Image (cartoon, rainbow, N blue to C red; front, side, top):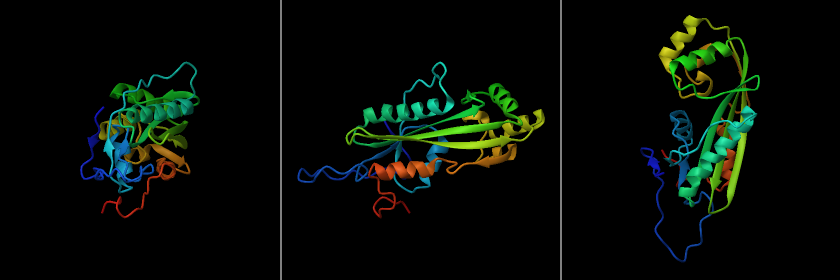
Length: 221
């Protein structure tokens, strides 16, 4: 599970110094995004801090009777822990999103047919996108998770609109088959959340883990 460096964002490795005290979490520690989601990587780049990316090896199968919010939270923590075990000195971010349609979890469709079926299910309905994030550092013992609920009402969608949208954006790797930050916004009647991207919660946990988001030596120009 070797981290992949995000172009221009490799965290500098401090020179060895036996007299130097162990750094606080985030103070010189590498930051790793435990997710291969392009969207999550693009969001983290907005913070202008160096990080690398590693793919977590996690079974995302829901447990029997598991609520969508519980599923998202469990998977975010599992992804962060999976990567952190291979990089114990790093601060690792895990994330997961599950669409909640009246208690029915809708994950990533994976293909066009499933995406079409999901959007037909959600047409005219209220859906809560349960977005979970977690931050873990093995060496410091830090582990924390948080959940952002995004309440969305879909318009009544015609089959033509669904097909046109899917061909245009191909959101097959997105829970609920819609990207509200892209063309998917045209599918919606309303959206309500105090943290639509869960980035505020991510920043809060990174600070708690000791990552100085606005330190001059970490912020990329």
